[in-house]
Length: 279
Image 1: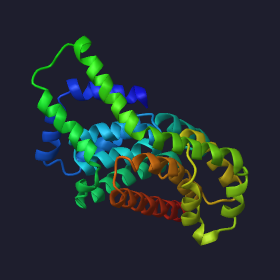
Image 2 (image 1 turned 60 degrees about the horizontal axis):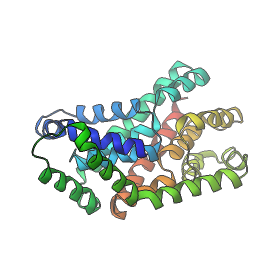
Image 3 (image 1 turned 45 degrees about the horizontal axis):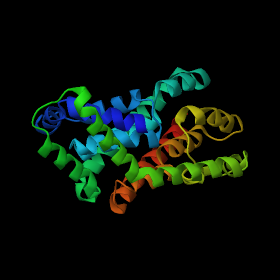
Image 4 (image 1 turned 45 degrees about the vertical axis):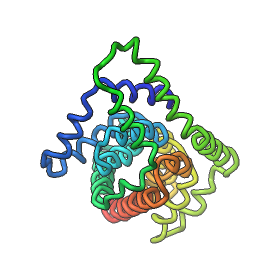
């Protein structure tokens, strides 16, 4: 996280993000901005908590909130390692369906959150950081001169979310260490119609990246759990984790945080039922 915050501080300083923001706002891209954000999320190999520094960086650069959320939703769901594992275990057809499902949740979820105009529910310090940068930045300085200041900005972000980050990791470690391995299989095998929402709810306290969860999905499917139910379980682990919520709480007010989780939860449940119906 420290490396990513430094990278984003440097990127914001040298990259013409204001031009990018103007392009995204002024041009009528007819949804392509959301598609670009989800594809960028798919090629960034981050879990949900690692994506948060990039998420903060986009907000500080005043990238539209909906586009930023499209990245945030997709980034933990899809990456090249997860795609390779999915292909090796489930074959091409299901892998393509999984990829399209992840991109769709990101695009539609981001679009909905953008249309709700909830920028006022982003914590004030995010906007203040950007305002200070605009006031102080008149001409570009050499990397050697500016790096100490950029590093301080990165550490400032870390300090603001550090306790939430530690708490989230501790919670994830406790769950991994003390919940029995067959706990979820026991409930999901015989859940029937309610398996998809149950899988989504059971997954929220957990935390892992997609690559780590896919072998668990194979185990669930081999024991008779429908693939849509198993996929909803995986997507909820990587996209709706409680540790992620604890960290995001420092950046987003509860109204926006709750709306974000509600939109993604609905999308995951819908995808789960769709997979169960199609396969």
